[in-house]
Image (cartoon, rainbow, N blue to C red; front, side, top):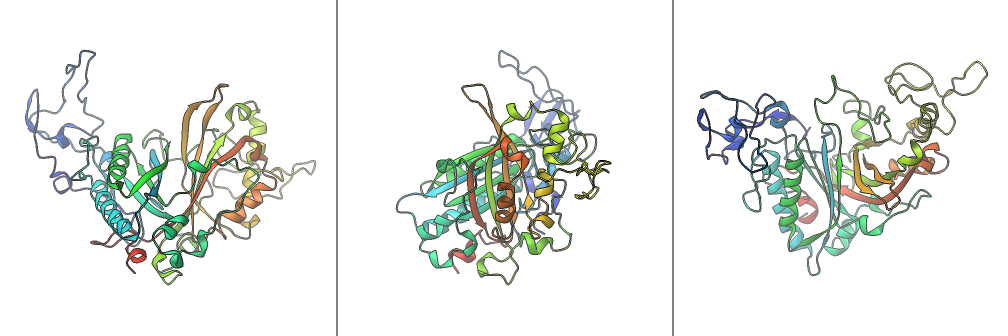
Length: 430
């Protein structure tokens, strides 16, 4: 798997950070020694801009990066990172459109630039040029960068005959209120990291390297809980307070690869070991949702908000018993409960790998929060994954009156790049 995490070598990953930082009580303490641990007091700036504190490390002590800062995902590999990688606390989603006059040749050069920069950034190194040093003091922080191609990319690069059938436009759904200016796009990038500055820096570097070939069409920022925020690992919660992702498929489970990734001998050949991603900006109507009682919220979802357990009983990990009734013969899990309708066995086995970020973009004029979910789901074929599930939800999901789909995109995400290659090379040069 390309998403193997490893501790970056302190010397090889940070050779570009060679200038010493002088602090009180330490001689020639490097940035890596100075920063990145929970036990370091750090440098604090007062109102006048002066240094109000100093590093706690004694002369000669080596303070390693914290576990959050040191974790690294591999850029090169059979599959791109950011698909089965552990979910990070910060997310950036961007789509680009090729500029007028940019075609296949310019796209090749762009993907070379982007791939080279992403490989360096994911290793915790600077991007050589175009790097503003925003993330200089941090380690890799589990940074992942994932690239995809939208339907229109193939027309604008003269590769229409190589466009996969799976990239046909998604059907319309009744819950759609789509803003077309924040949907689709020729190129798509997903950035994830466990540090907001690392995520921002990667986004900024890639945006700068896009010029003059492509310009940003839309950008969305998301977040999750930070690593270590809970006493033990737990399933993430969304902004409705619900545990979200209980039944998400996991690598190693039966048929996981077949349902999430295009097989090595798949069609088209350039998509081997790749996946298709559906991206939806789903607004949560929180003012309406929060008027419901806790019991009514549980009935809408079909699971207990407190611990994620199905209403049929047990714990979060207990399999739902959808036909189980109470003493009066009433279904414990309502017929239109979200967790019931979205089950694979209620959708001809349709399976998606959900990878979600929450978002909050301020408030409307009436004071309603513009907040919700950046829904990112992966599958080997969207016509057998997202589409049948969403069609079923569209016909009677109790949750539908509390959410609104406001943006949408579908992208082909090719397999990973080998060392010395760039992402999409088999498409663009094959």
